[in-house]
Image (cartoon, rainbow, N blue to C red):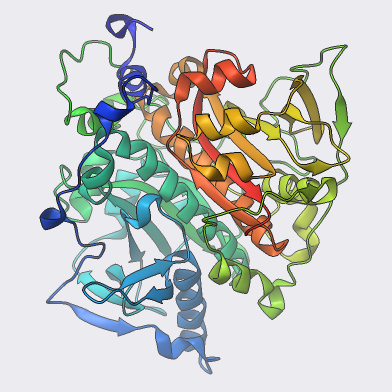
Length: 517
């Protein structure tokens, strides 16, 4: 793709690709003297400890604090400590590329009914909230989010930000991809932790960036808002919201001039900012509309019929809808979230076809879990833009090769006929995880089509949705006793060539699954 004819997001994507001939030049030496802190601290502000609320509360306020405490802990809380002598490493409920944890979580409350109104930062190390701003108006959040109806009936929202340097310190300009993937994993936890605690989360990705950053008094060059998760209280019938759009479009930028290395991340993020002049509805308020989300039939209502890769010569495998028993009332799902770890090494042994079916059922067919109390239509930005390909090397009763996963049909369609073990090792930057996994799952998207729908902002949505799917894969694999690890570094163009994926499909994310060593 010629840079001069591409949008800013396409330009960023091309410039941050890894290629075998340039990888050595792109490798970054780490300046350990400038290693970023993975936490924000506030010397001032009222602190509200959350640990006491792990116990059952007696009053209505205590029970509400308990639900919020458990939700935050399962979203981003510290789940293990590696006691390095100079700097203990704190693992969290959501994974992060390189263990850098670029996200910050803020809680915004509307009234003093159960929790004092204000803006809070979630202090991960201490599992506490610190009230950073008390004098604010909920209407400021509503206005920044273009009066999204989800905020009209609710009292609490989570705002997730990115501290860019935490990831850029190691990954340079490509860090923006990993930041969005990391936040997608976190949002996947929000969705499930909300269900466990009688909330329903609804994502808002369409907000005026400058307004919402100002609401938190952020220096947007260093830290900026990436998404809002509104928490509807399911114990109050009035807050059981219907579906509203999560994503709005920004402009498309072609006239971005020369961008030096090191400035690409900031340019991509700033270019995807939504302003009041970008509002696609032509009014200040968002209207209710039908949005692409998983409905009760598992299909995407706004998507075209799922007839892709229906080759007459290709193997087609209809998968059973294998459902895991989370038993969320007894905490099985919570324990899975807290026990999840990124696998460092696979044994090379295979998995069963039923295990693969269970992974894909939980990830894509939430309606199968309605009887277990989980959200049957979880909130994504726009899943109709994301495609899934599965490279199979060791699955019992399934031929080796690369398959397209047809979501609505819950069917695998073979597009390449060979064992890709050595090629997967190469594609994943020679990481043994790619070589020794039983299956390697690729999320892709037609970047041009996504930009035509959402402008530059599509780049955020695509990667956060891919990370959200990745988190569901992580948790399903953990529940099945399998190893799982996401990979954000790969040889972009070579993935398409080796697996037979169309060249216009941008590879967003890779998830490896297998038997842990």
